[in-house]
Image (cartoon, rainbow, N blue to C red; front, side, top):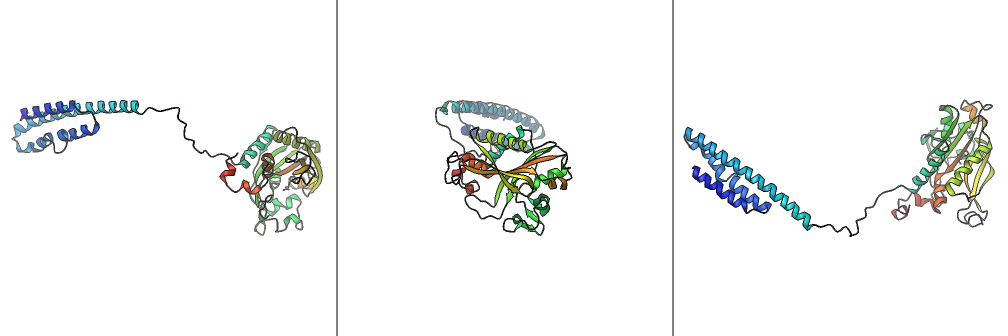
Length: 339
Ligand code: PHE
């Protein structure tokens, strides 16, 4: 028995020497150590031997099996190592071949311009406030002196949620919320979505982005308003751009103005975009109306402030010379991937 097992062991070792590949190895392993191998069968048949024989044969078979297993595992390690080396040698990487380009997502132009605008105001010491998109009529209208009969209230412009809730039509709502809740002095901007039931065309979208600004402190006057807005526009569009303030009316500011900037198409010479005036309107602004201050619990004898609001989409269109607002919302990659 022992002799048989010894010669089996020697044969296995002999065959193992010539093995070079994993699949050959696997065949050999099954032959000598698999379920049907002679070794396994011998172990299984131990019960047929007498007690004494069983102990000594069992021990011997297990010794042979152990030695074989060790030899097999050493060989497979070596084969795998050699295979890896061979692969590394064969699969040379040609680093001069052009790489594959992955399409990487990036920011929408509205977000790019918004980031830039925020950065400018943060550098001037403003902080950012937010307000809800669904507002009560009070915050959207009444608190801003827009009373029941004001044309801005007509259902034509406003999406009503129910009798006294609307989708905010401007970010001026955040002026009121901030004055009610924040300590004085105040110096904030508030970007966000606004909603108006306008038909969609090249210059109107029912959803667009606005940015509100509000500064409240002692001794604030119109010069602060002009200085701040001019600084912002010049940082954004370059020193060459000219600004012009025109008297206007907003119910919640007094006096009120609109700011115009030199036309981005004709640079001030006059064209169809600016209706030959050389300028285009870019934002609304004014000194916060004393009634609005008082309504928010601020003493209008002691404190004054200015506010401004503008469409971010319009800034994007000015910045990149885009003439149709719909492009900003269409999700057309041919357009978006240019930014
Ligand atoms: N809320 C005004 C609008 O939507 C803009 C504005 C803001 C005007 C602040 C004056 C002061 O047109």
